[in-house]
Image (cartoon, rainbow, N blue to C red; front, side, top):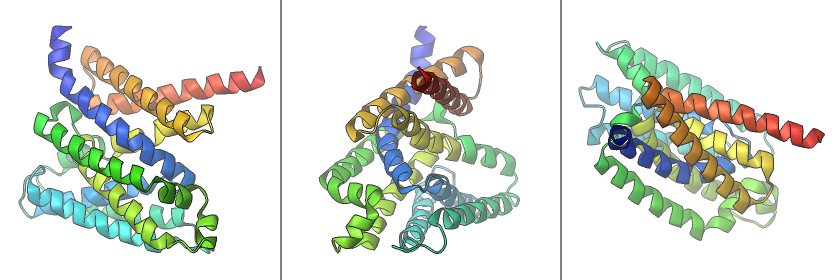
Length: 273
């Protein structure tokens, strides 16, 4: 058990920090009905990273981070501009197209790299087991600042996420606040993907929020439920990966899926009773 604590305390701490910010953002994403925006922005960030690798930079270098962030900012601008009051084409369709193009481009770029297969695996599930203390401190400070920013402007962000038509009626500059939301969202995703990979970041964003929404319609309750589920599943996944020698990121993703299925069954039984 001492070895487990010694090896796994940093990955678990990183998962706690990821849970804190991603559950909140996940509730916004679900309310907006743009479920795959995280996958798309995460894949765009990964595309920036793969471009940096092709140019000869290390995956965890400063150049790679800024190229990823620049690509994500571009994606955030595109998504904020494609939301209109009366949509002829659903925004989710545009998000899906962007995701497919970014994923295909990343695969094409990595096909030119000698370690392309390994980079693709790292891009998808990351390697949270190797997270360092400086990385943990960096995301803790960054996500805390972004969390305070969202808390200060919470009424505006909640209004454009939950009642966009009312926001338009009140004359609110929805495109501007959409841009701010996606830019801050993009910063979070870029930083998270470097640690956890595209699929694990998506799991942290969507699964706890979906589980919480199953059992409550109140925002504060959803947040607390989502945080508790994220923390519990993170520990369960890390515990299983250590004792059964599975890849940590992939194990946590599967744990999220399993818990979602169990909670959905419990909810269904509760409704029938």
